[in-house]
Length: 176
Image (tube, rainbow, N blue to C red):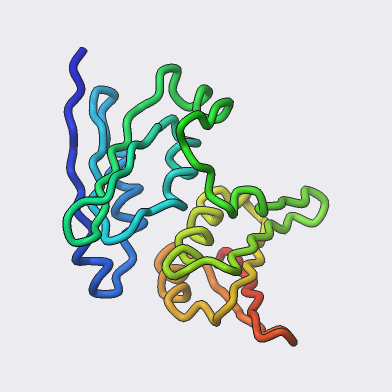
Protein backbone atom coordinates (compact mmCIF):
# COMPACT_ATOMS: atom_id res chain seq x y z
CA UNK A 1 0.00 0.00 0.00
CA UNK A 2 1.49 3.36 -1.00
CA UNK A 3 1.10 6.35 1.31
CA UNK A 4 -0.24 9.73 0.30
CA UNK A 5 0.82 12.97 1.94
CA UNK A 6 -1.49 15.76 3.12
CA UNK A 7 0.31 19.12 3.42
CA UNK A 8 -0.64 21.67 6.08
CA UNK A 9 1.13 25.05 6.01
CA UNK A 10 0.71 26.99 9.29
CA UNK A 11 3.58 29.46 8.78
CA UNK A 12 1.51 32.54 8.00
CA UNK A 13 -1.04 31.81 10.71
CA UNK A 14 1.73 31.61 13.33
CA UNK A 15 3.44 34.74 11.98
CA UNK A 16 0.12 36.57 12.45
CA UNK A 17 0.17 35.39 16.11
CA UNK A 18 -2.45 32.74 15.40
CA UNK A 19 -2.61 29.42 17.24
CA UNK A 20 -2.86 26.51 14.75
CA UNK A 21 -2.95 23.65 17.28
CA UNK A 22 -6.66 22.94 16.69
CA UNK A 23 -6.18 23.08 12.91
CA UNK A 24 -3.27 20.62 13.14
CA UNK A 25 -5.15 18.20 15.38
CA UNK A 26 -8.19 18.40 13.09
CA UNK A 27 -6.00 17.57 10.07
CA UNK A 28 -4.51 14.59 11.94
CA UNK A 29 -7.96 13.35 12.93
CA UNK A 30 -9.06 13.44 9.27
CA UNK A 31 -6.07 11.46 7.96
CA UNK A 32 -6.93 8.13 6.38
CA UNK A 33 -4.80 5.12 7.37
CA UNK A 34 -2.75 5.45 4.16
CA UNK A 35 -2.06 9.20 4.61
CA UNK A 36 0.84 11.08 6.20
CA UNK A 37 0.94 14.72 7.28
CA UNK A 38 3.56 17.17 6.03
CA UNK A 39 3.55 20.20 8.32
CA UNK A 40 5.22 23.48 7.36
CA UNK A 41 5.99 25.77 10.33
CA UNK A 42 8.24 28.76 11.08
CA UNK A 43 9.96 26.83 13.91
CA UNK A 44 10.54 23.22 14.91
CA UNK A 45 7.26 22.26 16.67
CA UNK A 46 8.84 20.03 19.32
CA UNK A 47 5.82 19.85 21.70
CA UNK A 48 3.77 18.43 18.84
CA UNK A 49 6.14 15.48 18.47
CA UNK A 50 5.09 13.90 21.77
CA UNK A 51 1.39 14.54 21.20
CA UNK A 52 1.42 12.83 17.81
CA UNK A 53 3.73 10.03 19.02
CA UNK A 54 0.97 9.13 21.49
CA UNK A 55 -1.38 8.88 18.53
CA UNK A 56 0.96 6.49 16.71
CA UNK A 57 3.02 8.87 14.57
CA UNK A 58 6.76 9.09 14.00
CA UNK A 59 8.26 12.28 12.65
CA UNK A 60 11.14 13.49 10.52
CA UNK A 61 11.96 17.19 10.84
CA UNK A 62 14.30 19.33 8.80
CA UNK A 63 14.99 23.01 8.48
CA UNK A 64 14.19 24.45 5.05
CA UNK A 65 14.73 27.84 3.39
CA UNK A 66 14.29 31.03 5.44
CA UNK A 67 14.65 29.05 8.69
CA UNK A 68 11.22 27.44 8.32
CA UNK A 69 10.67 23.77 9.18
CA UNK A 70 9.18 20.84 7.33
CA UNK A 71 7.97 17.95 9.48
CA UNK A 72 6.68 14.71 8.01
CA UNK A 73 4.45 12.74 10.39
CA UNK A 74 4.08 9.09 9.41
CA UNK A 75 2.16 6.33 11.12
CA UNK A 76 4.37 3.93 13.01
CA UNK A 77 3.98 0.22 12.43
CA UNK A 78 1.64 -1.11 15.08
CA UNK A 79 0.10 2.32 15.53
CA UNK A 80 -0.53 3.90 18.88
CA UNK A 81 0.64 1.00 21.04
CA UNK A 82 4.07 1.02 19.43
CA UNK A 83 4.38 4.79 19.74
CA UNK A 84 3.70 4.66 23.47
CA UNK A 85 6.25 1.90 24.05
CA UNK A 86 9.04 3.25 21.88
CA UNK A 87 10.22 6.80 21.31
CA UNK A 88 13.04 5.67 18.96
CA UNK A 89 14.05 8.53 16.73
CA UNK A 90 11.68 10.96 18.39
CA UNK A 91 12.71 13.49 21.00
CA UNK A 92 10.15 13.53 23.75
CA UNK A 93 9.03 17.04 24.73
CA UNK A 94 10.46 18.26 28.00
CA UNK A 95 7.04 18.76 29.53
CA UNK A 96 5.75 15.22 29.13
CA UNK A 97 7.92 14.41 32.16
CA UNK A 98 6.25 17.10 34.25
CA UNK A 99 2.62 16.17 33.63
CA UNK A 100 1.41 14.82 36.93
CA UNK A 101 -2.11 13.63 37.60
CA UNK A 102 -3.37 13.03 41.09
CA UNK A 103 -6.31 10.63 41.01
CA UNK A 104 -7.28 11.48 44.59
CA UNK A 105 -7.60 15.22 43.98
CA UNK A 106 -8.32 15.09 40.24
CA UNK A 107 -5.77 17.79 39.49
CA UNK A 108 -3.46 17.67 36.49
CA UNK A 109 -0.36 19.85 36.79
CA UNK A 110 1.69 21.16 33.89
CA UNK A 111 4.97 22.97 34.40
CA UNK A 112 5.51 25.03 31.24
CA UNK A 113 8.21 27.30 32.65
CA UNK A 114 11.39 27.77 30.66
CA UNK A 115 9.77 27.26 27.26
CA UNK A 116 9.71 29.82 24.46
CA UNK A 117 6.31 30.92 23.14
CA UNK A 118 4.15 29.40 21.77
CA UNK A 119 5.32 26.17 23.43
CA UNK A 120 3.70 26.87 26.85
CA UNK A 121 0.34 27.47 25.13
CA UNK A 122 0.66 24.36 22.98
CA UNK A 123 1.67 22.24 25.97
CA UNK A 124 -1.27 23.43 28.06
CA UNK A 125 -3.74 22.78 25.22
CA UNK A 126 -2.25 19.31 24.72
CA UNK A 127 -2.77 18.54 28.40
CA UNK A 128 -6.37 19.79 28.22
CA UNK A 129 -7.07 17.28 25.46
CA UNK A 130 -6.31 14.54 28.03
CA UNK A 131 -8.05 16.15 31.03
CA UNK A 132 -10.43 13.66 32.67
CA UNK A 133 -14.03 14.70 33.28
CA UNK A 134 -14.40 16.50 36.60
CA UNK A 135 -10.70 17.27 36.86
CA UNK A 136 -8.93 20.60 36.76
CA UNK A 137 -5.61 21.60 35.29
CA UNK A 138 -3.04 23.82 36.99
CA UNK A 139 -0.51 25.30 34.59
CA UNK A 140 2.69 26.94 35.84
CA UNK A 141 4.10 29.48 33.35
CA UNK A 142 6.78 32.18 33.32
CA UNK A 143 4.32 34.80 32.04
CA UNK A 144 0.62 35.51 32.31
CA UNK A 145 -0.81 33.30 29.50
CA UNK A 146 -2.75 36.06 27.70
CA UNK A 147 -3.27 34.07 24.48
CA UNK A 148 -4.56 31.07 26.42
CA UNK A 149 -7.85 32.60 27.62
CA UNK A 150 -9.51 32.82 24.19
CA UNK A 151 -8.41 29.26 23.40
CA UNK A 152 -9.93 28.05 26.68
CA UNK A 153 -13.23 29.79 25.98
CA UNK A 154 -13.36 28.22 22.49
CA UNK A 155 -12.93 24.77 24.06
CA UNK A 156 -15.48 25.24 26.86
CA UNK A 157 -13.04 25.98 29.70
CA UNK A 158 -12.41 28.89 32.05
CA UNK A 159 -9.04 29.89 33.44
CA UNK A 160 -7.88 32.07 36.32
CA UNK A 161 -4.24 33.10 36.66
CA UNK A 162 -2.54 34.05 39.89
CA UNK A 163 0.89 35.64 40.06
CA UNK A 164 3.35 33.86 42.34
CA UNK A 165 6.02 35.47 44.58
CA UNK A 166 8.73 34.61 42.02
CA UNK A 167 6.88 36.43 39.19
CA UNK A 168 5.61 33.23 37.56
CA UNK A 169 1.90 32.41 37.19
CA UNK A 170 -0.30 29.47 38.08
CA UNK A 171 -3.42 29.23 35.95
CA UNK A 172 -6.25 27.01 37.20
CA UNK A 173 -8.38 25.69 34.34
CA UNK A 174 -11.81 24.09 34.67
CA UNK A 175 -14.56 22.99 32.30
CA UNK A 176 -17.53 25.37 32.08
